[in-house]
Length: 235
Image (cartoon, rainbow, N blue to C red; front, side, top):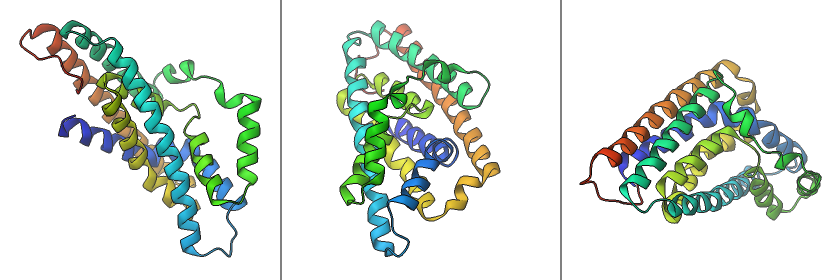
């Protein structure tokens, strides 16, 4: 995975975390901050709780990245297959960017209903009411399974790597890059209501997603038209 891809992933995830992630998951962070963390708790205890929650999210995202990377690897065995996968991924990324921007409803159409299942709701409620440190990690893991357009974009990116390792790395970077915003929200609830700031960051990340989709399309085109390009699993 080259520097351009890594920097693009970090930039998109970091910008989007202050827009999309706070809007989507801010309520969960505020809920567990008020229910699971005692007001008189020390800053160290609060920090540990928020870090464990973030580690849980990152763990789930990394596993999902490995799975999607493996799925992408199944179909990439030649330049033509690599090119077709990257072109498909590029188109999906551009559609995801337009959806995050609010121009189309592409992501809402493909969202699944896992989070609405009674089993998931019961598990979430049980973990939310627990006071143990371990419960913060598990809560983060469950949060990582919630339907989210931003996660879908990075899952597509992970699949485009056609590699278990690099797919996991993509989602790991995504999780780490979104953690500062979610960690800060645990201490500064006003971040959740800063609508104009979140909208600006969401617009910037949406544009970055579209540009990265265009870059991925170009890579796919290069695989299809350049017979000298070596088939590889890292794009």
